[in-house]
Image 1 (cartoon, helix red, strand yellow):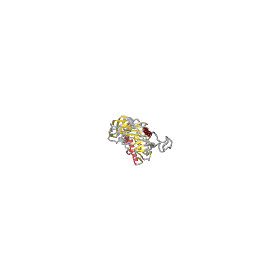
Image 2: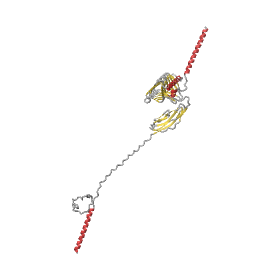
Image 3: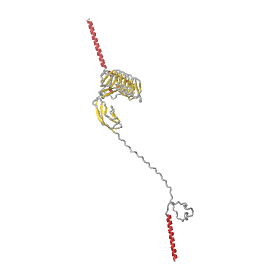
Image 4: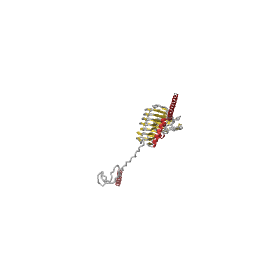
Length: 433
């Protein structure tokens, strides 16, 4: 009986030890499977891809992929090749060694993201949240239509979302990244398939076990990577994250280095570039800009066409996630357009009139003075022919008064009178004798 109790006690002890060992092994196995996030999820060669599918890649409309596009092991890529279809601003890898390697690297990244220990579990709805860096897990993750998810951090901040089943991003929803953080460091590990809604503004890299669908007009700052299924696009813009910060890189707060902005003129194109130093490269914001001008947050270029004359006080801020931000207050003057001078009308030259030739007058023969010839009876010619008023043959008719004729007649009469008087005196003298 005593021996029986000893045997029974020994058996219980062995069983307890075995259970303890099993619990210890189980706990140890669980701990070894999960890892703590210490930087971005490495993508290997998949980092250059904007789109990577396994079975097919299908596009409708003028989608743009800024980055590489790949497919492996499938063979069907459709809907690309230039307007009005899709455009790839990168390299297309279709069932080649590069695409196959990118798929292997995607699988590695997927497994790493799935193994991370969550900062928060049980997450479902994403709307209205402002999440600090960390690992967030849930069953089916969703951002509803017109929803907003904010990720607030710095250049080194990393977010990993673990969806056990699906990821659904609603229409016109937005993911905002602030504080100098980057879409480079946002990862969505999806246990089945992901859908990005119409007109949504999505950020981060999707690592989907099955498929990824981007509906009409959605934009993606990141990557759409599908392990075994298809990627389907419809009039989308996919931009693979570039210039991603290197983990551990020393940071330096930004300093604005640009000078005083140039003046602008109403209705004339305007450009001015804000520059700044800092590591990583800073982004820019500006408030108080003149009407018609905007700033590109990445390049710092202020551009547009000003519409209203006046002077604007503009506050420019450069930030890169390393405090403090740098702020500069500048003045931009917009002048009214110069008045357009009214051009003096160009006088129309008066053409010189073509002189009308004066006709040469028909020459008039000089008046012929009739020769004093003994005349016959009044009204007859000297030769006794013709009638009074007839002119001598061959002579022009006399017109106007000529004093020569009457003076000649008077002189003749005087001479005749004198002669007659002399004759009378002579007769008187002879009569006396």
